[in-house]
Image (cartoon, rainbow, N blue to C red; front, side, top):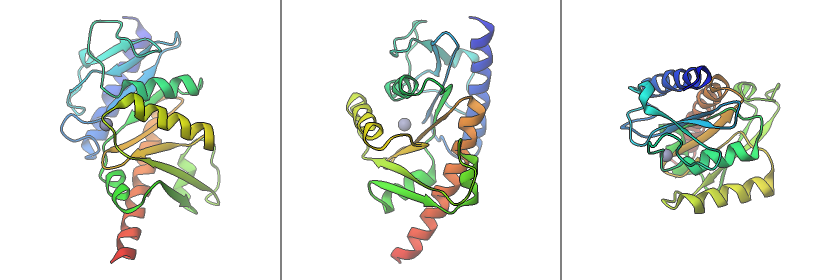
Length: 204
Ligand SMILES: [Zn+2]
């Protein structure tokens, strides 16, 4: 394995520790990946505890999601590879199972609108709170190719987004680097949590 793979693997291991510490990837849930400059992808293997990842728990796949080292990638690998295919600038994809994303998907259907939050500026390309973004919410589906197709259809219809929620499950976000994607995880989960409290109050 080359230095670049080892560097990306280290970043994914650290991201896993951070995400797990915050309670955003309980009980082996979630999966994380980073793209190498030659197009191969470092991704967490299936079923490992994300707070206790070791270098051996990060594997290599090709752009189509095929394992290159005999290990078993996450069941949701296709959701990572389709993001890399769509966005040449994306270098990392993070998928936590957070309380905020899970709860807001019980209160809001189809899409969550985020507007007028200072923290939106943590998302790539946004420099003012006077911004409105939509985070689509897709029904959960154990058929990952079917779910990936739905996500792709959304991109075709609505253009670029910063992340999406899978209902009762978690969310996906991405960035040029693992650090960028992690900043998006932290900002979006904060906003999902705020929106959950607001919507919860409104439905009382
Ligand atoms: Zn998941």
